[in-house]
Image (cartoon, rainbow, N blue to C red; front, top):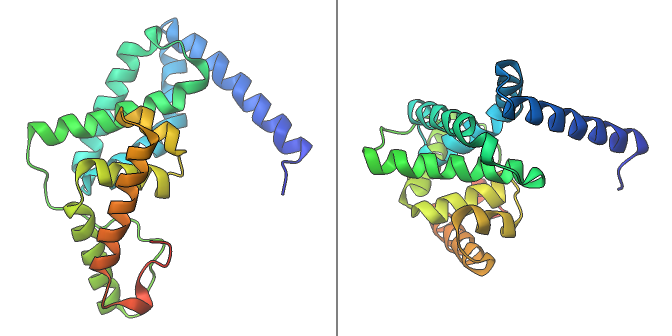
Length: 194
C-alpha cells in the first residue's frame, strides 16, 4: 500500500526540519545538536543494546557515539546518508568498547518475536537467545541485528561494516543457522523467521 499525500507531506516537512537542525548543529548550536541527538537516540541505544547485550555497556557506547557525532558532524557532508553514518559510528563505538574491556553479563533484551505464556519457558527462551547472540561473531551479530531487527538494507549494512553486500548476506545466513540450532528443541517457541 502506497504512501498517502499527508504522509508524503509530513515526511517532506520532517526532512526539511532535519536539514535545518543539521545546518544549525554544524554551526555549533547546542539546541540543534540536542535536537539531533533526541531524533536518533532511540535507534542508537537500541542498536548498542542489541550489540552489547548489556544496558551499562550500551549507555557507554551511546555516549561515545554522541561525542563522535558532536566532534565530526561539521565534516559530515553526505546529507542523505546521515542515518547510515550514525549507525556506522554506533557499530564502531561498540566494537571499540569490546576491544577495551570484557563485556559485562547481558541483561534481558527485547524479545518481541517470542512471547511464550509460561514464565519458565519464557525465561529459557530469553536465556537461549542471549546466549546464542553472544556466541555469534561480532560481524554476524551486527549484520543480523541491523538487517533483521533494524531493517536496514543489505547495502547499507555493507557500507557500515566495510564489506560487500554478499558478505553481509553470508553473515546473516550464518547467524540465522546458529540461532535456529539454539532453538532446535523448542520448536513451538522458535522464531519462524529465522
